[in-house]
Length: 291
Image 1 (cartoon, rainbow, N blue to C red):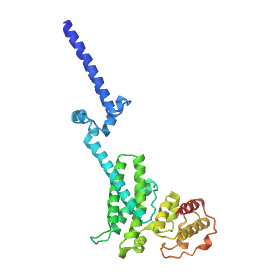
Image 2 (image 1 turned 45 degrees about the vertical axis):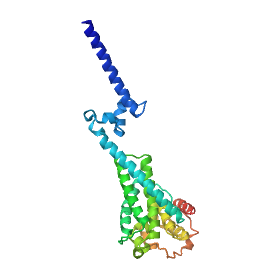
Image 3 (image 1 turned 180 degrees about the vertical axis):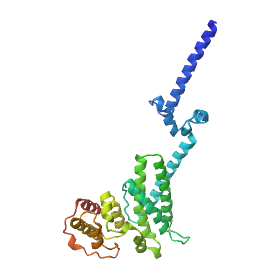
Image 4 (image 1 turned 120 degrees about the vertical axis):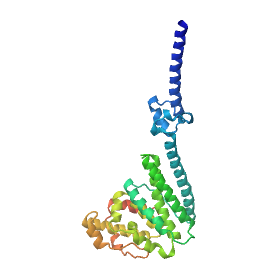
């Protein structure tokens, strides 16, 4: 009888020790000072191989196949994005262009994603022989859209999300630069820009200034060869409209500035150079001087 009690006591102690070591093992696998209740959450990211085979012990939402494939997809898209950027940036630098990174708001990002998606499909000529850089830009944009969607699904608003905002806003500048360099002769800049509100100054630049993303659009204009003084004069003109009629007045903008900015257009707005420039336009002009 004493022997049975002794064996029973030993088995209980072994069971308790085993449970404790299992808990320690699970946490140690991921990072040491993590409370035991967080082990399942950490396991979502990288579930140990030996535990992953025991499907009955894994909650449905923490199975390795789901979470690891998602992580792999994000990592693959991120690496592909970086590779494409290195290639494209080398191309831009070889042609003496200067591409900058700018952050977009989430709302503006969605709008520009749509524009860029249409843009990439629209600028590629139908002939089989297409500029390698343009094809690469199309592939890169597709990868970045995948990357952005995965990040959105992950509800990640940290460094990854910041990176994709930078990637896509820089891509905008690169695409316009590439189009100007390798665009199809029959659909070059004139017809291209008339199709997009990107190049319209009426009200659009005021809207963009309010969202603090006008510097990105201004950068693209400058990269495409727009004369800096014309852009400067246009900003002065718009600021004077603002002073006379109020910020964002559609009537003032439509009546006084009913044109599309053209590479060859002489704006003849020198008399606005002495007008008072509002703070947000001062910021834009200061940014333009960097170029």
